[in-house]
Image 1 (cartoon, rainbow, N blue to C red):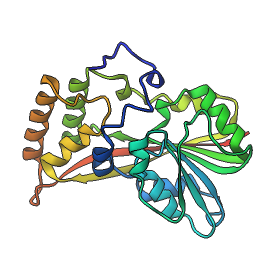
Image 2 (spheres, rainbow, N blue to C red):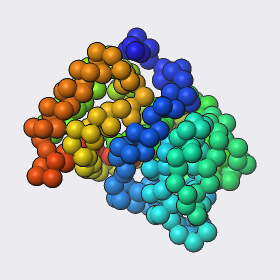
Image 3 (spheres, rainbow, N blue to C red):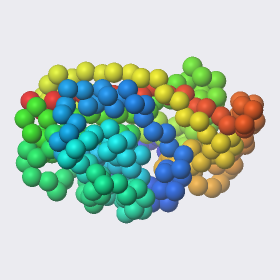
Image 4 (cartoon, rainbow, N blue to C red):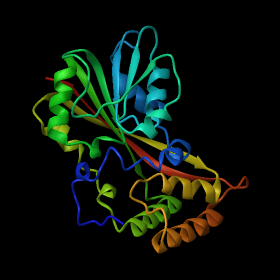
Length: 260
């Protein structure tokens, strides 16, 4: 199991580490609330955008983006992990691309918008932002999104504590300051942040364990995994509604800036 002594997430095999998590990721990761996408796209012409969803994973954010635009707009789903990329649903506006954030296979000044949803903390920040500045058109936009757990909710707090215990307080649990690279890079202007409440309904014990298993830093087996599953099973029994479902609460945080 990885330990918290490692702090640079981009040194922790970000390309390969999700290969055995694609199914759980697609099934149990939360999406993003509609007002968050409105904030990302505010002021843009949704009819003719060229967008890159960088670190697209299994396409949760990509599909939402593709559904939020119209006309001739298209979304490049940039994802270097083969298993994750293969899980991206077919969509007439989506083009899967095998590439990394630090080296995008597109021409200079060819993109209107770059989105990183639950992904930017895995990239090497400085070369990534330099690459974003290269491929964006003048005044092109970068939007970084994270679903951060709302620990004021008892079930969500219990879930978070179980994840931290199982992963040995993995540094991916402490990614909240990665937005500062965008804010302070000098390559982008007009930095602003918006926060939106969000909720994810899951099917009881199976859903909570599946949601936990989608995190690449949660052990796949062993005593830490067993203890986590016991905690989550008890939490699900305590917090389930009449249908047996549970709800995790989030704050979706959107960081936006434009190319200088």
